[in-house]
Image (tube, rainbow over all chains, first blue to last red; front, side, top):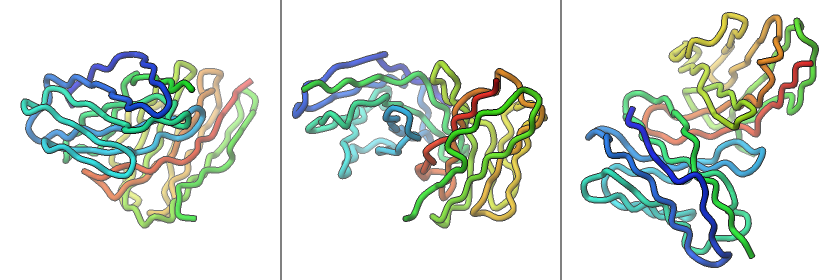
Length: 110
Length: 112
């Protein structure tokens, strides 16, 4: 599976959009980009995933560049409850083995 | 509530003991997993089962033995517990490849 690179930490003001970047320059054609988050002491929570088109759901939007070498997770209006570690994971559709990296620790402040 | 539930939530035990952690999901998922999160917060997959059949075994010591009596349950039994086994263990389930995982809330195991 392709490796991902994320900044170790980011800050965001409450109510503002949080844009979390992820580089996955070695991604191959059959690999999806998944985003999970882990709020302190809880189990990881699925957020969103995509292949090449931009995706949006009730939690977030996922923007994938045309060359698929990077993506951005957008939380449109961050709240204090969005403070968590966010993981960007590249997963082949036929391997079904989520491998977590170190993620980005997002701190939302009042 | 539809969920992945693990018991117990906390487990404190002495070195050398044998303990089990139970996991149940009522989501109708076919695949279940065990992950370990160590003190450095690094999440690592240990096992996965699909319809009671072992699919992934990530070179975990033989002291760890998963058991899946049916596709809604995946239990983790650990023999001869060691200090290094102290961690948070997460169970998860999914519909299979290409689908998101649903994680349980974790079992914090402390070996003293």
